[in-house]
Length: 462
Image (cartoon, rainbow, N blue to C red; front, side, top):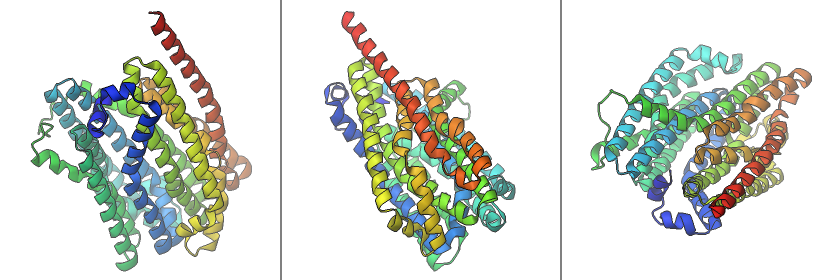
């Protein structure tokens, strides 16, 4: 992992990773990662504005219903992207370019085959899947249409995420960033044209969802036409041990995404049955757009922290790892808390951007969003810790932290609060879960700091 990041950020080398100020390294890596996600973040914000202004609450409710499928795509694509690129980068770093190429080629075909099969299953059962995801009578037809169109781009979306990860392994971070930025630009132009000019309705949104990440797949032309040694070969004699290694490394990222997807699915069903389409649309705005901004910050800080943690932990520089873990968690809490405060102050104009002239939707989104985001600064600590344990190859505890918030705590709470207080109670499940997982995170944080201090003492003795 540290080898891959050396390629990505040529200004840093192993000596700097071992000797430069932890604070400087962390903020440099974190900020670079954040910059790389800005184009996609702007695209998502504009998406919410265009859908809200052009299609209203029905369009937003439909997007909310299919959001678990989007999360499944990013979970599989992002997870396998981390797994394949990490294993390939490690082999390349050892000088075994032939094996690095084999890892990439096998990973590409495995990802593509799995994603095509998944898209076919979902696409041919779009109506049933829409019902399963919680679509009610008023959104069912739109959701089914959306799903069929989305599935055309699904394999490209999943495999494309793995391709841009491999571009970084092959020392092409600039190309990777350009592909992500151009994909965002082309996709948002299509959405604007389809919604406001061509009047395609939900069809335009389905095409947009297929393109926004699906265009990442165009990175394959680099591996076909360039002089890179990381070529994709028509070799289906897979090295299953390596593929299992890819999957193992991808699991922490995947389980976090899937856990969130399950929570979203259950929330949509509850709001659809016990609330109205306005409730579902409000949740779509909060979950799909507002939380996206919060999550972008945490993901950037996590990904900025991981390569530094991996290198220094491997080099047994445990005191530096301790400093890094502290600054990562504290930075995330402070930044997310500041953004939460800003949102609370300016929630009305921000929500109006998405809700348009729908007064009922605006009021519902404002009241529920303040409830849901209130303790995100605390709850997102678990994501930082999960990423940390993944970076030092402690996969079991990383997986546990990946599922605790949404799967173990928030979803059961959602069912309990809904049974007692109805749909209004459902909105409180996430902030309560945030507080609980923060307490768990504090315990594990202290335990890990104590372990690192112990490692430092043992090294000094030896």
